[in-house]
Every structure is written in C-alpha cells, then in structure tokens.
Image (cartoon, rainbow, N blue to C red):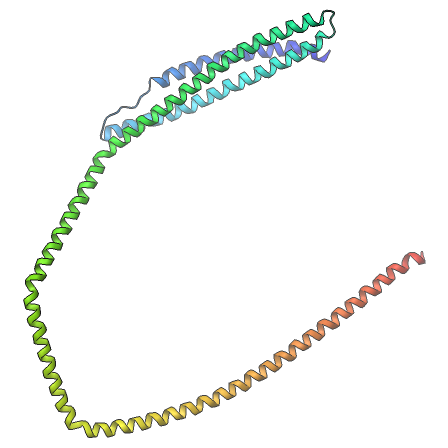
Amino acid sequence: MLATASVPALAQEVTATGAAASGVVAGSDVAANGAQNVRPAEVGGPVAASAAAVVAGGATAQDTGASTDFAARQKVLDRRTAENNYRYAVAQHNCYDTFFVNHCLGKARDAMRVVQADIRHEQLALDEEQRADNARRRDQEAALKRARDEADAPQRAANEAQSAQAYEDKQRQHALAQAQRQTEAPQRAANAQAFEEKQRQHAVQQAQREGGQAQSQRAANQAAYDKKQSDYQKQLDEARREGQQKAQERAAKAERFQQKQEEAAKHKADVEARQKQAAEKAQQQQQQKPQGQ
C-alpha cells in the first residue's frame, strides 16, 4: 500500500525533473554555441597580450558555467534513472497482486525501458556536449599559448640581442687588455731587472753592516738564548707542578663521584626493598581480607 501510494508523488517529481532538465539542456546549448564562437585574437605584440588576457578571463568564467551546467544535467539524469528503477520495482511488486502477473510485468518492463531509452539518449547527448566542450577548451588553451608566445617574442629577441652585444663587448675588452699587456711586456721586464739589481745591492749593504756587528750580535743572541732557555725551564717546572696538582684534584673528584654512585645505588636498593616489602604486605592483606569476611 505504501509503495502504491508513493507512485503519484514520484510521477510529479519526474514531471518537474523533466522540465528542469529541458531548461538546463536549452541553457547549455546556448552556452555551448556562445563558447564555440569565442576565439582569441592571434596578433603579435602588446595587443595580443591584452586580447589573450581578456579572452582568458572570459573563457575561465564560461568554462566554470559550462562545468556547473554539465554537473547539474548529469545530476538530473542520475535522479531520473534512480526514480525509473524505483517505479519499476514498485510496479513489479504491485503486479504480483494482479491476475495476469506476466502481462503486468511485461507492461512495467516496457514502460521502464521507454524511460530508460530516453535517459540514455539524453546521456549520450550530454557526453557528446562534454567532449565538444573539452575540445573547445583545448583549442582555446592552444590559441592563448600561441598569443602569449607571439606577445613575448619581441622581448625574447631583445634579450637575445642584448646578450649577444654584452658578449661582443666582453670579447673586445679582453682583446684590448691582451694587447695592452703585450705592449707593456718590455717595460715590465725592465722594471723586474731593475728591482733585482736593487735587491742585490741591498743584500750587499746588509752583509757589510752585519759583518761589523756580527760578534756583538752573536753575544747578544747567546745571552737571549740562555735567558729564553732559563725561562722555558721555569715554565716547564711550573707546568709540571700544575699538572700534578690537577691530577690529584681529578683523582679526588673521581673518588667522590664513585662514593656518590655507591651511595645512590645503596639508596636505590633500600627504596626498592622497602617498596617490595610494602607490596608483599599489601598483597598479604588483600589475600587475608576475603577470609576475614
């Protein structure tokens, strides 16, 4: 009885759904026709960039509307399919209460197949429109890419020309520097020879000065060496004393640390023993409690 009573309500819903589907299909056809007429202007320079930006904005809004339209239409078709299957199941159930069961089942099946074929026809049309819309989107993306490439072509050419000019300038500067170094080579050789001669004269003069001061310098050097050795021996003795003192301090610290470790281990063992005794006592009390009750 409940299934039979729900059929008129479903019929009303199907009528409304069919009307909505017709409106959606009509709207999608208009949107699809408008979308197919949109093509970006394929011109170079800033005009191409501006046109590509305008078309890209319009195409994005149009694609969003088309995707929403396709989704709404697909939702309607899915709902009609579910309602058709439901009505067929209700009709099958009601046929078993009639005298001519097989005849009734055949009519219900035929009615279901008519609606199913109509839904299938609309589904194929929707799929074809989606494929056409996808192809349109691919064409628009390709056109936009061509427009961007053409718009960027002058800048790329300018960048390449600038790079080539910078490379040529660098090569010329290198050649000029090389020629200048070759021109200055004799002067640099003469300067190097004069510097070497000056160094030799300075060495001779230094040797002459050192010859007169050699004896006094050796005595001063010996005295400085002896003093340095004495100071070194004192520092060495002081370092040894400090080393021995630090070694004794380290040994004392190690002994105190070992003592603290032993005290800590003993304290830990005492705590664990007390905890174990407490646990055993609690367990004994727990075991004795039921016996007392």
